[in-house]
Length: 219
Image (cartoon, rainbow, N blue to C red; front, side):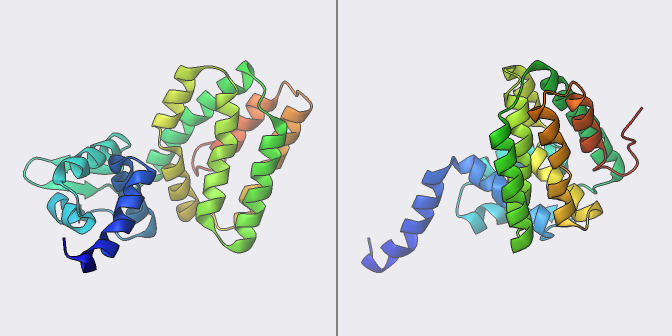
């Protein structure tokens, strides 16, 4: 091998080693959707993306199928994959299911309050630094603590299958303008769990539904 080529190959090898190749490709696709690289209606050419990422088409196809399951991508014969248009109805459906799952989780177990407080603090720090990615990451981690504390693995698996991080990015970018407000919204939930308030589940449900316009927090 040409010694000059070796340094260029090493970073790619290390990047793949950090997480499975399929996950790397999926993350790359999601980042493209969130950043606006691909807009609703845009075609994602499997062959072109594979060449760009220097991988075969098979893992790209697999990643696209995962995003299609999340209803972020739609595909049709002979036309390939295209980005779906995100609507309030899409968000409403995801958030209604998510709200029900988290309300159920809150009734099954008590999450570690110190961990919840830490994630809220990190969300404030991310907002002050202007990092939406970190804010979303800690926000999702906050809610995952609650679902995981239920002790119900099936519930956690279904919750994770919703693509919470992706849809959180979509909802904040489309409908929210105050990042500090997002962090502050979580504080009443922490306090409710801290005092074993039996209304914690309902408070959590209303909190989630409030992020989706057109979906009332109460039936």
